[in-house]
Length: 582
Image (cartoon, rainbow, N blue to C red; front, side, top):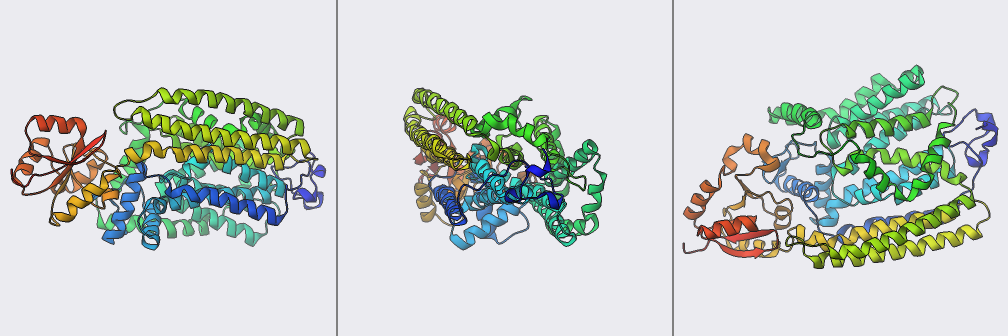
C-alpha cells in the first residue's frame, strides 16, 4: 500500500521513510487517553477479580502450586520438588514467582494464579504497545482488543500452567526484536531493545526449557532464508546479547547440576528431546490437533482472519530491508508446525503464536468498513444463538465420577455467559450504526462480549473444579493429621493426587505407581513403597497413618479386610486412617 496514504495521525509520515506492517488509511482512536485508561482499569478488574473464585484443578494447577508451597516451606530455591520428590521436568521461574507470591500474600488459589494472570495481562498491553509503535495508535488499541478477547489467551491466563509464562516471555522476545529492527530506531534504542530480547529468551528458557531459545532462533533463521534479509544478523548485537542471555539463564542450571549430578541427562536429554521425539509422555494427538485449538481460541476474529493475512502480506519491507509481517507469519507457522509434528501435544503448546496473530489481525481491524463489520456482528449473533441451543444438551451428560447435577450447574453459567455476550454484541451493533467512521468503538463492545463469555463460562467450571480439586476432602484430612504425631505417614496408594497435598499442606508417600514422579523415586527410592502388598504390611504394622486411594482400590482393599477407617471420600477418592486397635 502506498506509503503516502499512511498519515502522521496513524503513526508515520512520508518524510520518515518508515513503512509499518499496519500501513494503511489513518484511523482515529475510539476514545481519549482518560477513557482508554479507564478501559484498561476495567480490563484489569475483569482479568484479576476471578482468580480466587475457582479451586485449583488437576493436574497442572495442583502440581505447580504445590511445588511453590514446598519451595517456600523448605527454603530450597535451587532443587525443585513435587510431593517431596526431586522434580526436574521444568525450570523453576514460575515456581520462584509463585513461591514469592505465597511469601508476600499467603498460600491460596488466587496467589497460585497471580503470576500467570500478570503475564497474560502484561502480554495484552505489550502487544498493544508494539502495534502502536510499529503501525499506529489505532492498530495498538485494536491489537490489545484482539488478544484480550481471544478465548485462548484469556482462559490460559487464568490457569496456573507454565505455558502462559513461557508465551509471555517469548512474546517479549518477538516484540522487542520487532521494535529493535525499526528503521527509525536509533542505535542506542536498537541495542536496548535487543538486549531486552536476549533477556526475554533467557527468561523463556527458565520458564520451560530450550524451546524458549530454539523457537525464536529457528524463526529468525527461516525468516532470513525466506526474505534474504542477511543484514538483520548485523543488528542483533550477538556478542553482548549472548552475555545478557547466559548471565540470566546459566546460574540456575550450573547450581542445580552441582547439587544434583543426575540433573543434566534427565532435563536436557529425556525432557527436552525424548519428550518431543517419542510418544513416551502419552499425550498423542492427530496432525490437525492444533487446527481446532487455534480456530476455537481465536473464534471472535475468524471472519476477518483471511483479510488480515492478505493485508499484512501486502505491506512492503522497511527501508533497512526488514519485513515485520513476514516475521510474524514465520513465527506463527513454524511454532504451529513444530508442535503439530510432535509426539506430545497439549492444548496450551501453541499459545506463543497468539500475540503474533493478534498483531496481524489488530493491524487490519481499524480498516474494516462499517458494512463489513455489521455483517461480522450479525454472523456472531447467529453463532451465539447456536451456542445457546447447544448448551441445552450439556444437561444430558453425567456419570458416577462426574454427576449430572454438576453439568446442570455448569449449564446455567454457560447460559449466563451467552446472555451477556449477546447483549454486548447487540450493543456493538447499535454503536456501529451510530458511528461516523471507525469500527473500533463497536469492536470494543464486541471484544468485551467475548471477554465476558470466556470469563463467566470459565468461572462456571468451578462446578466441576471443586470436586476434582480435593478441597472438599482437605478439612477432614487436616483434622486427622493435627491429632496424629508429626511423623505419621500419609500414603498415596497407586495414585498421584495433584491437588490434595496443596490443600492439606502435606506431602504423601507414593505407593506402587510413581506416575510422573518416576525420576524422583528412582533418585530417592527410600521415600516410596514399591508395591501395594508391601504397603499393606507396613500399614498393618504401623500404629497410625493415613492413605488416599481411588474408590475402586478402597473397595478392593476393604474386601481383603485391610484395616481402614474412612475419614473422607468423594466420587473419585477415599481417604482412610489406620484404626487405633487393629
